[in-house]
Length: 274
Ligand SMILES: CC(C)=CCC/C(C)=C/CC/C(C)=C/COP(=O)(O)OP(=O)(O)O
Image 1: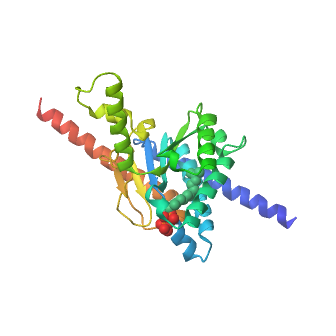
Image 2 (image 1 turned 30 degrees about the vertical axis):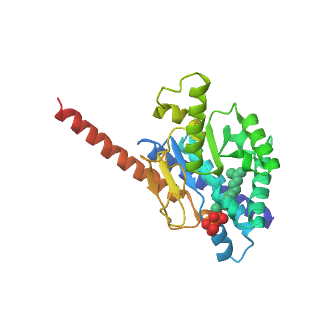
Image 3 (image 1 turned 120 degrees about the vertical axis):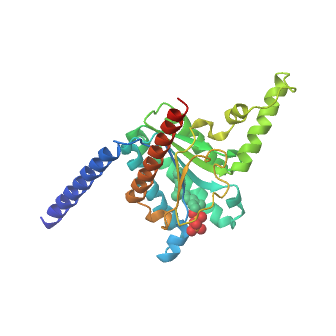
């Protein structure tokens, strides 16, 4: 009896929180909603050490934080989210650390693509970007399967950057441009910005409106260098597993403030040229 009434209270509190969140999002939707939010998931191991847990547990809690934010982004109407999960530099970590992340990724990808998983529930398309050849084979195969199975989903795109660095992406795109031109006998023709952009791994998404990096770090760490020249950068001083709805709301409010300032400035420039 006591158990039943406890679960009723939990359900009631859950639906009240959901109701308040939707109300908050309605209020935010009066202004422009970012189309693309990118995240650098910084501080998972520090979180694990802070709470005296195994590093793997830190990544698991980090994954739950990602799912929480993805749900919020979906409700808010964001169309793309990109997460920097593993850089090419990260392969230089101790082999057991690399293996921990690869095993977790495999486990999570397999969980996500299940029939009843969140990707089907919310209509999320998954894209993996980076030098995927560097991934352990089972992870690469699972990533390709996830992209294939979710290719028809239209509600939200979850872009996962693995074995990724921006400098590798730009070099790879430049090489492909040159090969393309050579194959079409166009060696004399100059490479244009649009040619490079077409060959970027990130051609699957528009440039991010917001880049949120946790743990108070303000470095880009070789992430989306080409794509973030106009993005709003926000770096709350919390570890990734501690990130929450209020950080997303604060980032969106700041994005809206900058948008309205840019809009006013454009109007001024327009009027002064009349
Ligand atoms: C399928 C899918 C999207 C899986 C994602 C799973 C996930 C949360 C991976 C985190 C990986 C990672 C290396 C984060 C950085 O923390 P860190 O190790 O650099 O921590 P630190 O900053 O405290 O050192």
